[in-house]
Image (cartoon, rainbow, N blue to C red; front, side, top):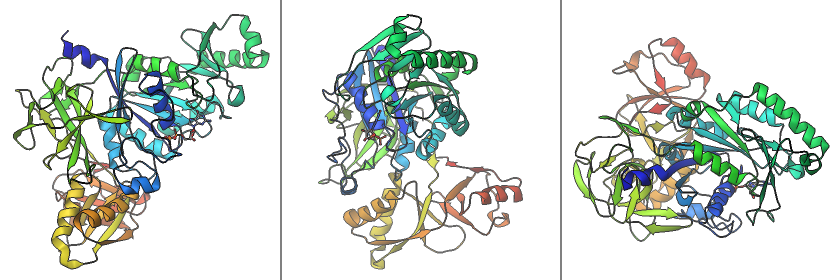
Length: 530
Ligand code: GDP
């Protein structure tokens, strides 16, 4: 095996998805703590100080104390090189969150044990399912009163439609959360005090049949555990790696990110069960990082003006194969040109570093003079291939854009187009009228503010946004459809995107069903092809 293949095999690149406050930041921080990347928990993103480690590039982020953009962290643990892709779980999140999932090989879903599946998780989960990537579940906050464990699993299966397989099982919850039972090893793992999570804590392992357990757990907890195990062994799905790989079975773990309980157990099992960098589809078929020796990557995110003094952009790319050397010439497929990737950066824990080597599975950000678009392929291979594009995700909020000073039309068009090209917003026009009216669609409402702010600050253009009542958008899959003949509902509107592709907007979800009923041939999609 070549040195490059060895490096790639060590990579584990995953995204963490959750609803806000489920504990994603805390869990990430604890991973870094075990990986030795940070010395003390609380140094990644202390919410209390509103200090954001990696992406405080815009005033809006600082003002509101939230992270608009997603970031990547790299650290090492147990011989693995781990890349965590952070997906902002805030309700105002942007399309970037979805795109980040395109760069991951698996996802970790963090669920609050007292709440179960929540809205944001549901949305992000859909994207994981579309990609058939493995999904792992960490049920967090077991140190608080939790919902019944069986109910929680039921909730995941019903709400998300994925089978679950508990790898371990909690013993008690709230103050009585003592540890977890490892189903495979038939061992109880007891956690010691971690001084509110500041220390890693010891884990004591005892065979489930060891009589000592009776007095350690107390009779009641021991009996409950015995009953749970019996029920589980009879009813729960067996662990099957094949099904996990296809994203059809989610291994479930329990713990508390705050007190570190169950975090390392989870990390160890997860790293062994999740996969190294996966093959990706291209126009020349599947490109497998284990057999493709040359560098290749695709752009999944473009971030503007990280450095306010310059109007530059950073293009984030996921390396899919081979080795990256700073300054090496690579071919930019969409630009049909050889380029040198300059100032490559990587996030290591809380700092941004210039890197000179990176491997398949890693994420790097490179200086972009405005030549890259989302989904672009870069490769050093002689067989020039293009990776499958990144879909456009359905915006959920729409507004009509009005310019305050109509004299600045040129700047306005330039600005809004550039911001759309970066993928922060999507712009649409009325389908058949000659009107120049622009409708802007966003995944999270905060993007409206970002648009206003950036147009004013970077292009000196003031706009007014008038909210539109639409909440659902569908791309039309049928080629060459006659849009005039389409029979819709009264709350439907026909529009087109920048490429002139027709789309439909709806106020009510049920209208989508009705429209499909009225037009038997019509095929609609929630994702736009790029
Ligand atoms: P995020 O929004 O998903 O990133 O959530 P955070 O990690 O910021 O956590 C939200 C809040 O829940 C914070 O106040 C955390 O201290 C708290 N929290 C996180 N994990 C746990 C846990 O395991 N137990 C308890 N009791 N609180 C937790």
